[in-house]
View 1 (cartoon, rainbow, N blue to C red):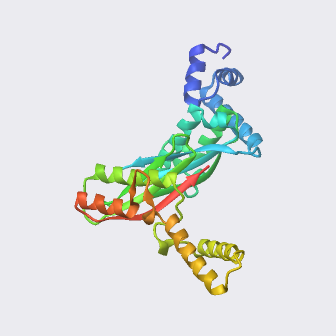
View 2 (cartoon, helix red, strand yellow; view 1 turned 90 degrees about the vertical axis):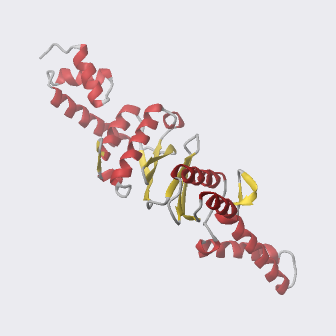
Length: 281
């Protein structure tokens, strides 16, 4: 078939997402055979992806999708800030996150979502945008019937937070969602290492203790005084990096622990911060 019409090119473009000229060229090479043209474009897309696979990816974005009692976060890198801000890239991020809710984020690239094989979706997007695109990190959670997952992504897509808040009994879900989102926003704006002191990584505490000991020794004070100085500063450090003891950014006169307690009283059920995760670019 030598007559390749504009309608044929348009249809192939809508199906594959490839450029108009690429679609016309594929149809011409395949004598108007749609299936053969789609396969040719797929192979060309893979070839482009292979060529770009070693290129450095320093930019990118984070997206969190929510559905019912589930949420999934994906962190995907690209080469330039220009592409990271591109609407096509943002749509791709959203599409991948929404599929991750259903199929999970572990081994995501080897899975098949509602839009087809995830790896193939990456290949197509690399071909469209002309940059290497890499899946860096993912997380998917599900909470129980009385809980909620608060999600917050900073407007520039460089910070993403998920936190699970549980309630001891059924409460108004929209209010609970708002509380959880407020705390997620607080975490995005703060340095948070753990929910409470007992959750702290011992390695983090030990590292800070060693730093404080070295710092205190420079004062020239006796060892017994140094020990008291270090213990006091270490206790302060622990409180500063634990979520529950921090001053709530929206209401600095109360801690997050107090905010949860007050919110729980208003809802008629005790609220508990169960887990959180923060991702940055």
